[in-house]
Length: 359
Picture 1 (tube, rainbow, N blue to C red):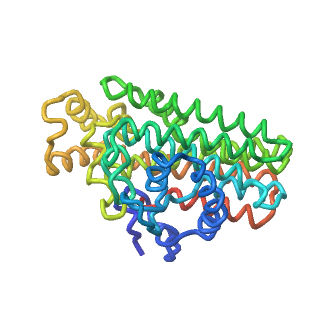
Picture 2: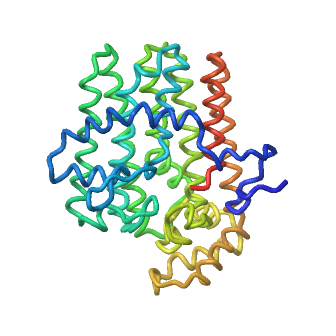
């Protein structure tokens, strides 16, 4: 039976119970575990900033009225908890680390929306679109500050190492975002540069999530290194799928306009690969990328034709295969260290969820 994820260039999976059509139990548990502490941290903010952060985190609407079911996926907190469990610890001991990575992630989303001028996230207006640039900058900064505070409040002997991992990942995230921004004004972005950007922008925080969970659990170096490698691989897979969804994702599911990345002429991984290896389709794509006339006013028909160039040039298929290759490598890394069955299965489920997701 052919799966719906073929729309994104992803090969169908044999299991008809599609993981992308349901929430993984570990993601639901992660939400339950982080929400009380996440709310406590947000309550530390002043009355001007608190409603903005509450809105972004999905707890309220723009008027401050409570809402439900508009939060993120909690993949990174889930990875913290599973890594801690893989190292033999009670997942509850890793709550500060899970809250910290979720705050760093959301800091990056608010700033990313501002820099990309994206007006919608999770089917709602973005922070900058409602409150303006200045408040969006401050909201992101506030969450980054709280990400450090929640770890500093923790009495674990491993707090220093966990905080260093978070700080280094944040620096890498900023490096990746800076590269992504610089690519917008360039027409000669190489695939290696794009991969390096993705390693910083996305994979670094995934790897740090696994590392923080392992650190707070007091895991030995061999376990930490395997989990970090797993996080890096699934982080790259996540970005590859994100890039596919940015072109072929369904707006009613992704919460973003159709062909959103093409409309912005972003040098994403499937785009960059097609330019480098897509033959005549790649050359036509490269010519379109450098033609700035009507870049923001391109019709859906024009963008559909550009998406077809990427398809014909092999970029879609390459990105799909590369995402699955990274998932396989990530799973192989943790299989070598002999962790307990339940966290091992959860790590596999998380990895497959990342490539099977539709948003």
